[in-house]
Image (tube, rainbow, N blue to C red; front, top):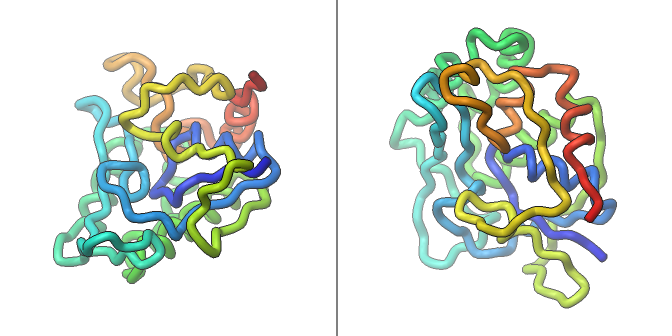
Length: 206
């Protein structure tokens, strides 16, 4: 059975864990774009608690995700960079990895899909893994497909029996307690090379 994910901006750890659970993953880029999801936003931990970073898009009626364009009329690149610096400058591995993501803040990808793809590939490179996956050539809606799109959502109330994340050190943990399943960037900046071990250990076979 193949599993289906959506394209994500700095995806949550739960999302990344699926590449270690399923050998046949498709990322659907022919689905209609959906607002208020991880497709264009991520969650980080700041001094004030959990915060969202959202990539603004040029809205169009019922557009395929692959055709969704980024809106640069707002200075979101600078805002995202400054938010990451403020949140993670004191983390153990911020200085090691932040330059790897400079393309996000300096380049201007036209399509959200292209930006998300480069982020995902870069995260895998830092983790030292090359999981196999494919991008869809049409909308995936088949009976033999495990749809993970609703499971991995900021609003999801579905219990993921295949994912159990252990606590790890976070910069503001003493102030806010451990906040689980933030963006993969939170794990990378705080745990560095240990990140891959934490991700693999989070995979639970139900």
